[in-house]
Image (cartoon, rainbow, N blue to C red; front, side, top):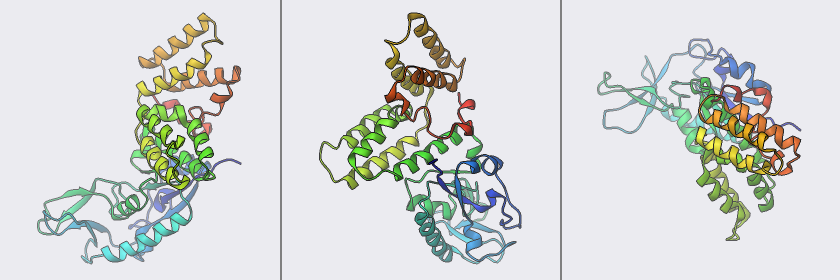
Length: 318
């Protein structure tokens, strides 16, 4: 059975004419490509507040320069919408939690769905403008802190896109574990080199949690592991860390390859280190060696298949 993560997403990004002006802001890659591999759960907090389509714009505001509280109001009628918005956000959050979603894609710079850099005015001095997080996005990020998220601006960045997709598939795989320590240890084993690409120190910490030498209850171990696991995947892989993971994988073939074959592989990794070739070249070659030499332990490693290869995400990663 193929894995299909569930992704909550701002409805306008799927081409629904639900924006304040009656239009949409469809994100083409999400609509045309990602949709082949995930199931979407569309949400529009403004529409669900009953504001209609088309509708008066809303914006964020603070009462004065010293205020830390960000609120929401209609742009022209000046009606404060904060309380009713929070009631709607709670209902949406409960609904998408029930759906067991694995990620959320927000609309950039939206007063409700923007993850950051949302224009925020100051009532005592409307020339004093700051930047905030959209109220709905803030609500979801606080209520579901381990949930992978991205906005429609960042998803155009190929490195951030690839990492987001890796996170949503990892999130789903973890959700499907049976709750036993043994299954968690197998999960950790299969993600070993993938985690190494993100942070080697956290790999050791996660290994210690999964080993459960303190004999904690399985539920407690799962929570500790999952929190650190998702936090680790938030750390973008570096060329240095990817190369380190590749050399660890290479160690499995030292007795299988001739000196000439080893030299070729080392040269390939040196080219990657120096920016001459990309990561996909090295990863694919190591995967070929893994299957050719039937390295069962490596065949199960998610460093070679964290998400469906037909998404073609690695080809543009340096």
